[in-house]
Image (cartoon, rainbow, N blue to C red):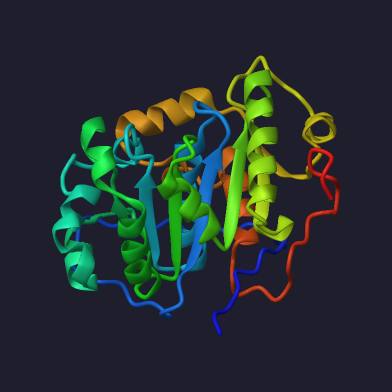
Length: 288
């Protein structure tokens, strides 16, 4: 019987700094990796930034073996977040997808900031090469090799995206306070409900992507009808600089306001904590 990912409320932040260069050794794992999907109902809400920083926090704060997989297949940005080269990528594993080994998988991943990164295809037309059955084969090897697998999903609900959502132990839904983003989050929560994904697996995160848009969490909760775990403060210039440098902000400034909130999220996903976070049983878009 597999152990479920426990979502807990953190007692306080920790933030040891740790990074590493490229290496070719395969990480040790408990053999029962948990899957965390980061998604949104609308593009442009900072989903990939949050996924990259969360991966660093889970490694640095909890010393977990973390894999970050960019499943935004057409226009993935995780390579940009870590200044990774365009190759290798997801495309490279396809030649051995039916007999994929941990050793070959790690040879197709970038080793950066202590995590293993599998980037999206280098050009959009290659996105269709990676199909649902390929994802399942990949995920089986990832779960046997890492403690945590973070999937940066596209807001486009392809077969791969839907399969990833159904295979997830936890799902972070990212929204901003823009009207279009709020609408997208509501629609996405409805889809997750229709897929019969338990409320306990879903964490709603508010990202303040613009300084001029300051909306209280409670106000958005009343609109979306779902509890918000936390709000990420606006950190425009610092985040932009981190992207230019190719080093996630958490890796260099874990004690910043942004870093502290990323720590809160990472602690909520720490599988070793005995308590479980159960979001309040509010109706989601009129559904129980």
